[in-house]
Length: 326
Image 1 (cartoon, rainbow, N blue to C red):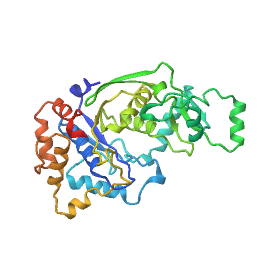
Image 2 (cartoon, helix red, strand yellow):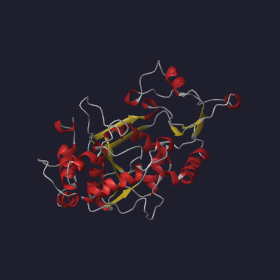
Image 3 (cartoon, helix red, strand yellow):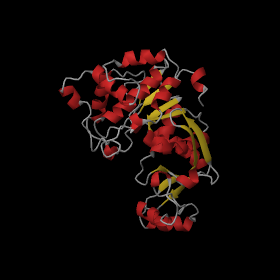
């Protein structure tokens, strides 16, 4: 819905998970999300996505906030407060339950007792799903009450899956990657809304949060592109307005793999120890994705002011896949 950007104030966000120190890829995505909003004179929101508590690292949230502040990436609403608080997912569990219940009341949710290994075995004869993963084959879609009680007696705790209509095809235009289309049932099948351990799934939580926080521009890493169709299904089923999406290129290591906080978590510390300034790092990040011809130091505010004077499409065009994204 790109026409939104011409009639509404842009509301963008960055939503990191505190599983470790932000690496340079995370920071570049944060810069781009901030720049897409600030460059359009819009508002920027920071949300902490900490649903998967067993994976969260002590003090990681505090360190993330410090790193973003140090770089000059400010926000209008965030963990400190705002009109749609709380901005920390683990404090929003009751909200997710209400929207899950709405889908359940509509008959769109069913319990699934399959383990990951059972799904992989059952899907072995099917074409691979999106990103090469196993597509859920619908094993528990038509279970009788008797079969469900039998699983319960075995001590199995079910996940909850969305009953995706077989003919659901989602199309949208990504601001960076262009026209996209996904037949959701063929790509992933019925997908999880709440895990067997009771943790709400990313797909449900992020849609509810983005909608209730009135975000109309979602800028994030290209690795999340394959999730977008599932999220649009939920936007539609919950009668939410669908935002505009921009999936930006990732920084990859020498082996061509995307960076990981758990594996490559050096982040800003080595650069700060080498006396790099925030302006030095912003210059490096902007140059690495083609926003500037050189890595000359520049502040985040100066970069936003530069792009505020130019058409929004100039940002999208510079980020489209090319040699600098490899």
